[in-house]
Length: 261
Ligand SMILES: NC(=O)c1ccc[n+]([C@@H]2O[C@H](COP(=O)([O-])OP(=O)(O)OC[C@H]3O[C@@H](n4cnc5c(N)ncnc54)[C@H](OP(=O)(O)O)[C@@H]3O)[C@@H](O)[C@H]2O)c1
Image (cartoon, rainbow, N blue to C red; front, top):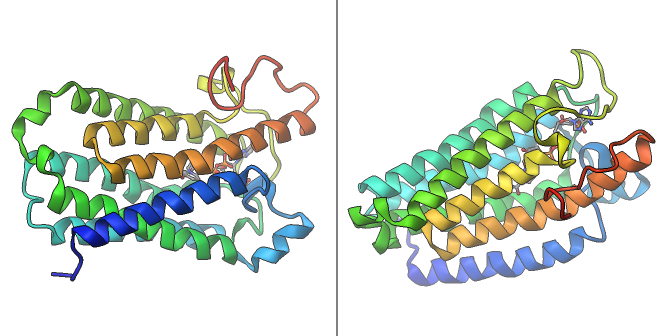
């Protein structure tokens, strides 16, 4: 109905992989200027700061709406497995877009630079498009009910739910570090912070690896790669930042992967 076909899906999926590869390399050299990495001279190159709540809605809304639109535009969405995956994907993105931003106690002036939104919005819209369109139209193996007991589906769903719980628990610990009105940074303790500096990122990676495995699709893999490209360099940068800022930062803690990285 919207004029896209399987070729559009392939081209945009390849484009997402190519953009993600460039982003991965770039983010090892330049921190995306938001949160604790904002405020340096170079951040100004990225344009004005958009306040934190609208920023999250502008950035994540395109994933939510593109997925919604293209999933229901497909002719095969009315099958149990695509619908389960729809609920998981959109449940996460509904929370991330419309609830999470209102739980934050960010410092005054926090938000995303316009330049970040200019890169992030098309990438996120493309991600919503390829995953929604694939699941609603082309995921032939997912339209068979036998996929419900395929080990890939079961493993993927367990990883997704486990990752979701880890992300939410870790985000909560981080947000609650500040009492209402406080703006500084503290060392987080509790939960998986015992092992790594960024368990919220680890949870997110586990979650989307689970989604990719449960879907067993290139668009699902592309989304996992986007998450890795964003969060691995960020976790390393956050970890370094904690060590520079706090002399008593726990030495045994790793950045992202327990005992490894
Ligand atoms: N799928 C993806 O590609 C992707 C990409 C990015 C983020 N995410 C997810 O989005 C969520 C948020 O990511 P994020 O990078 O914004 O997380 P973050 O840097 O850890 O910050 C989250 C919130 O906690 C506050 N905060 C962070 N560290 C703190 C500390 N030590 N003491 C006090 N407050 C602290 C931040 O305040 P300030 O704003 O004042 O720093 C912000 O309000 C995470 O769950 C992440 O996994 C996903």
